[in-house]
Length: 404
Image (spheres, rainbow, N blue to C red):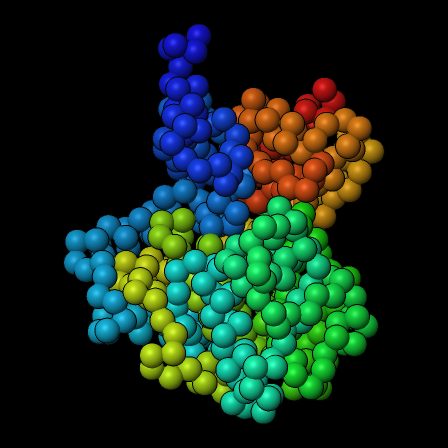
């Protein structure tokens, strides 16, 4: 088929013409999806090994989630927080119980959850810890990705995300990820929180050294500092546990959640913490018109109920071992490094072979969609509904790409 028959080239050109170039997508134009599979405007099918950066942990159009959305669309979609709606309490209660926390504050996007966590930690520092006004600081890690608001990029170490967006927000101390001694040394009398990803996703699925997260938990407790875990990508079943922190038995003071919480249908995020932390907020001090809206809550409560069964955490853990075995078999055959936790993998391609972008383009040509990051690294994060056969298909496609 030639370009004047295919719809994809024209759709790509239109997107390039009419949208700001803040992304560099692969030239694939999706029109429908089901489970772990996507279909483009020309009818070609692709295995989704990105899952919307973990927003689609339960696959595309999960029937239980779609049914909840349809039912809510016929009744009520928005009230704002000026009123209470009949889906709100169930969502907040069931998510709080899943997290083992007292309270939940719903928002919309992951960046909003991070901003909320920052604001709450500062207010807690002033009102509870007794930090002098305007002096609160938060310790963060190199290689972090917590979003792209002006405050968040102020403590990013990725120059693409940070450069030319100043002046930058003060109040953050950056330390090497995984270095407990450096983190401990950075905490002073004005430190109100340590904000970390238990696994750094955008950096290439970087898993910290064993014992690091328990060490962070211990030093935060000893120094009266909040431990905030950004589980927006790593949480909700992705790593083979409900939260990535669970792998080392660590319970943070605050969970930041998003992405998969909306079931791939609506943007939903949330902060979960105990009353002695979230209780510092009073009416009028923080909010969002769409935060905790009826449609979002109706979908998200079903997400929580899916997770409460433990089925998806088990699938991620078990299928993740199959993924690990397949990928580790490619080390020395084009891969120079592999990091896997559940159904989440970072793969370092030999840069002498090709860039991560080129690898993803070649995978797409073979019907597998993935995403590159930082040069020669690519990430795999398939929906948790993927099958053993589909994992093998993805690994075999990668092997073909690496073999040239």
